[in-house]
Image (cartoon, rainbow, N blue to C red; front, side, top):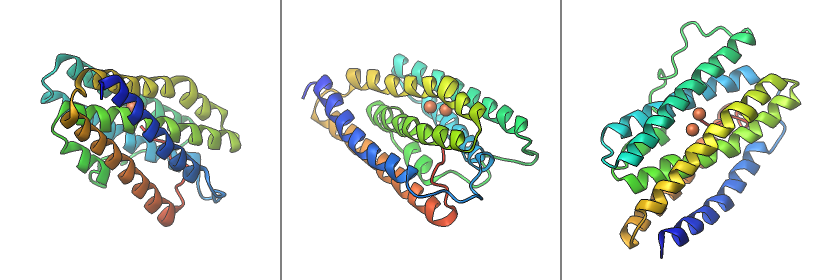
Length: 218
Ligand SMILES: [Fe+2]
Ligand SMILES: [Fe+2]
């Protein structure tokens, strides 16, 4: 397969699985105890983990274009962290003592950190994880609007989402360049599938434990 054919196929597969993930994420009536503030705190953790992962990968990714894409992403996720923090402050949330790293790395971060090659990182961390973030953030923005919080919905739709879409596109560009040949494509495909599988499991666990089914991504 050419890299173009490969990326088109991966995109199709991802979209089908993502549609199901977003459907599940939006399913059911969220309880009153599920608040925008609680979900924004989950978002802080996701943004922190995305920035941290991009920084880790940047140090040992040899290709200059991939390294710079990771640097750009790291800066964007840090910026999102601060924007969300500002929004939480405006909502009156108390973040004293809040440490996004306190629960330890999420199962997805643990797995993603282990990916050694640029194609796997681009496929899992950017092309797939960022597509998941875009799908979840849409669900979250709709939830904010339902709760009458237009400002948080606008923060996501107008400021955060354009960056997350850009991160996904960075992944696409890197795959078009580096997903050359059967071996690289097989690695990329399996890393992308595993990312979706773990994201689905985490979402399911969170839903069962706390009903956090509208949580945004990174
Ligand atoms: Fe992102
Ligand atoms: Fe982000």
